[in-house]
Structures are given as C-alpha cells and as structure tokens.
Amino acid sequence: MIQVAPSLLAADFSRLAEEIQRVQAVADLLHVDVMDGHFVPNITMGPMVLEAIRKTTDLPLDVHMMIAEPDRYLSDFRQAGADMISVHVETCPHLERTIDQIHRLGALAGVAVNPATPVELLVDIFDEVDYVLVMSVNPGFGGQTFWPRAAEKIRRVKAMRADRDRPLIEVDGGINDATVAWVRDAGVDIVVAGSYVFQSNHPEERVKILRGG
Image (cartoon, rainbow, N blue to C red; front, top):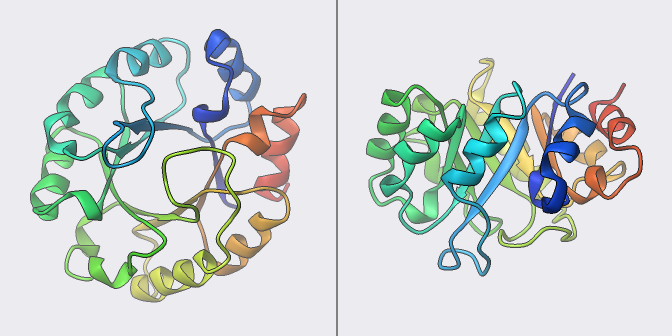
C-alpha cells in the first residue's frame, strides 16, 4: 500500500494547525514545499514556519527544497523539525556532498527531478539516496495538471532499483483519484497531494482514496 503525504502548500495558512489536524489520523507524512523565488517563481515558508508545524504534529515532515542554494539551509530546516529533506538535482553541483550533509544531520535524503530532467542523471548517486522525488508538474505552484509521462519516469526509477526496496519513489504534482492509478501502477511508494486533499470538505476520505483503501 502506498503512503500519502498531504502537501501543506494547498492548506489554509490562516488556520494551519487545524488543517494538519484534519489529516493527522490518516496521513503517513506531511509534505512541506520550500520555495525561494529564484529556482521556482514563488516564495513559501522557511524554518520558522516549519518549527511551528513541528509543534502541531508527530507525523514525519517531508521537506521539499525548491531553492537555488539548498546546502546553506539544510541545518536550519533539520533543526526546525524536518525528518526528510529532498533537494533538486538541478540545483546541486556537488550532489553527493549535499546528500552526505543531509545524512550527517540525521534526516533521510531525497533527490527531486523536474519533468524535463532524466532520472538517469542519478545513476552514480542512486545507492546513496533514501528516496527519489519525481515531479509530475513543473515546480513552483500548486493546483497544476498532472504530466502523464511522469508514470514512465517512475517505471524507469523502479527499473534502476531492480529488486531492492530502496530508494523509495515519491511523486508530486497533479495527483487526484484519477491520476493516482497511473502512478500506483508504475510502482510509486509515496504520493504527494495538495489541492485534492485540502480543498475537500472531507480530506481524510481523500487520503484513503489515494492510498487505495
């Protein structure tokens, strides 16, 4: 059964603690999008907001760093409560060093790849990462339409993994009750969903649907 990570990017920030409580009992982890207005055309939350989120939940916090210089802030986000930290291969000229730093901080390390980035770029770092985040939209905004070729990328990551169970495969972007079937069939382990979950009056039911239960 796949894990579901509701994306707080789509939550109502004016009552964030209440939004988290709406999914607390059914979610496997919470996805936190960090954007800097440079790597992606949007700005979201920093370590202070993450620290506040950490105080409201015991769920693992999956921090997706869509920022130009992630190495500068890894320690800050880990100290604020991040359990998982993913960085973009497009922003890390010394990716192995970045992954090692995340591990030294005590967090799980992930690598995200944009739609136009081939997953094969990860072949030399593949055994060092805990999860691969396949973007099924171009990062920067919530509510975008799922990119169908992401399912094929998930299959390619699964083939690279062969018969092992690591790294986990995560997908983010345009996930709903229809598109989740495509990524589930492709072999995904974790699905991130924002608008589909938080824009519902019954987000807990949406999480169950995504999980396949």
